[in-house]
Amino acid sequence: MKIAVLSDTHGLLRPEAAKVISECDAVIHGGDINSQKIIDEMKAAAKEDALIYIVRGNNDKEWAEHLPHYLEFTLAGMNFYVIHNKKELPADLGDRQIIIFGHSHRYFEEKKDGRLWLNPGSCGKRRFDQDITLAILWIDRDACSVERIDIEHEASRRKVSARDGDLFPAIRGILDKVEVKGLSGNR
Image 1 (cartoon, rainbow, N blue to C red):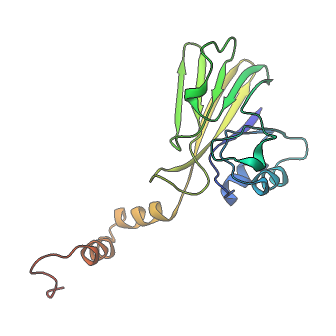
Image 2 (cartoon, helix red, strand yellow):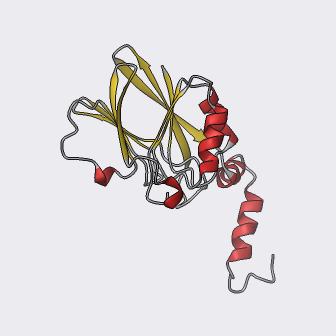
């Protein structure tokens, strides 16, 4: 089974995320959706028979009161627990094998004590200078693996051009922002 795992879209479902959703058998969203429009866009992108699991995040206000704070379910033989903020997990997770959360906008993946801990990061509006990421969770029988998906954004495109040897525009941009004593007339 192929599962799209995303979080913290904050009112923006990027085309790259919609494409991943369209190729998966299920979708899990870890909260901070910000509008019903994003849920509708996810459902429109998903396969007709795809299962969709969504929890409410701290920025999902009145419009999202119908969404659960957390979810527990079994999918492809694996037991899941999904919540937006990892700090709100219960002390006893029972037989849950996969823990999915969001909130920090930072991708995190760790297998510990027989559990997979996964924060897919944020694939919506870029905040806090974080990468734009989501994940694909692959489940085959009683094993699972994760594929991190990085979505290129404007800042990363600028970094790539500077790494490719075109440093003059990057240096010019820095000099334009910084007043260099004695050099401002020599550029």
